[in-house]
Image (cartoon, rainbow, N blue to C red; front, side):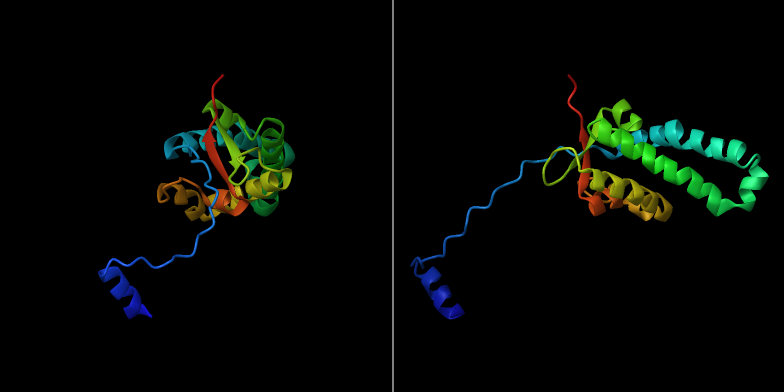
Length: 165
């Protein structure tokens, strides 16, 4: 069979090809850059996470020493409200957190190119914790062409520039 195709090609005979169905091409997504995503992440950490962390340490536990004795409880008291606050921001504000808003970015679903569903947002925000804890998940954006992180890949989302009005 392979020899026959080679002979046809050599003698410039055209063999009938099966028609391939036309695939719908997805529009090119303008992914946000690494540096601007890192700035947005740090802004979210300092605007949302750190105040929660200090509140838990000094108001809930009373001192750093008490919080140190109950580390798992202190981290859970901080991370769960952080995920809830991030989810509320992203769901109510077109997939934007204060950090993403400050850098003119937004999170979209890769398939629909629209705001992600509530489940995707919740899953993405819990996966952010996994990405940051493993550090590899967050560092993936430095090795990928589309700059997507582990939580973006798991939740099928991406960060794009938000069009300025």
